[in-house]
Length: 109
Image 1 (cartoon, rainbow, N blue to C red):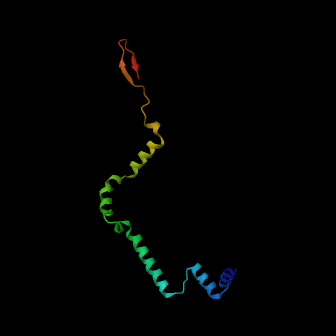
Image 2 (image 1 turned 90 degrees about the vertical axis):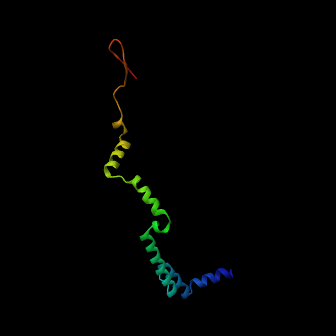
Image 3 (image 1 turned 135 degrees about the vertical axis):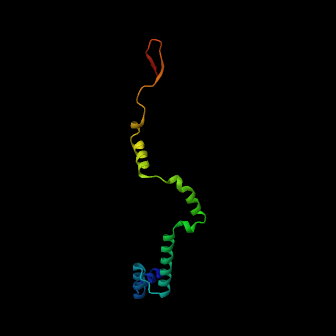
């Protein structure tokens, strides 16, 4: 009971209220923490700008080797999408002739 009472008293303490509101809004008053937040933000932006290529050794060489396999243009994508969405347009619908019969008719598969 005494511990719960201390927690309740700390909540109504003006210093605790100011600390909670500063933490919620991100405006922490400590100068060192602001400097560290700025450094972290700068490093994060730099990492996002350079990307994974600089972070993972050998990734750039691997990507350069794989690039020709993924180089497609819009007409290629359109043709493939048409084949996927409308496969019945690309089938052979004519009957296949196996062999002609001696009487001039054909046998179909």
